[in-house]
Length: 255
Image 1 (cartoon, rainbow, N blue to C red):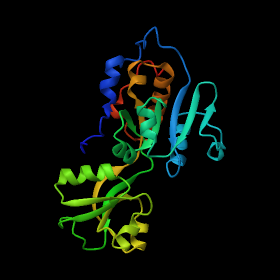
Image 2 (tube, rainbow, N blue to C red):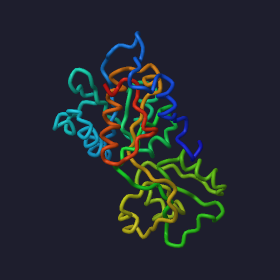
Image 3 (spheres, rainbow, N blue to C red):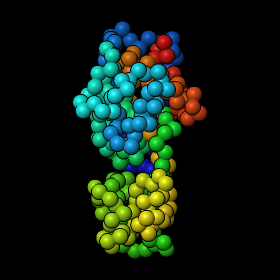
Image 4 (cartoon, helix red, strand yellow):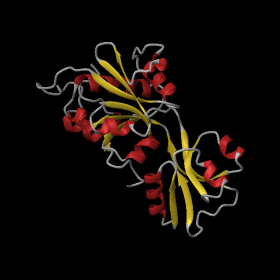
């Protein structure tokens, strides 16, 4: 996996150009209106994702966070699918969802075939190596605990580090505290959890935030509802000063 761009993640500008970036182009006579499926992630991303939709003018029920259904219809033309963060890119890549609001950490780890349209400017944090003060990242046979095993292996390979990856599912800090690992590679927001466990940031690898992603086929075929919703979200994002990839209107979605 390349660390200079998301694995197998396309360019919004390139795909928009492929099916007609100009807003006065029809997506095609065989493309019909249909319900759009948007995947949102449970957990820390859900609140910020709902704020993004509110800025875009998407009318979501106020009690949707309490809804226990995995797919919730919103009006006649939108379905919201609730997913674990690490599964969300796969649903979009496989076409089970047209669009998704997903953390860039999940995109990097999943390696799914998705198109990243915008950095939504919310849920910002950092992917960083952390460990005890003075821990040496250049040490031989370093053991790195992480919930992001695929991404960690790619980082180690790119840096030429002699290290073993210890895949984890729970609290990665515990691996260092118990001596099971030398360092961790994980998300860091405030750094409070690290400090409470006697750890510090050793090196920041990547800035992480919520991104708008799309299924490549849905963009190439120019499904009107998908393009319309994507442009609404991107316009709401641009109004806050965050960046939309390529800044190209998608098809006739702006209509």
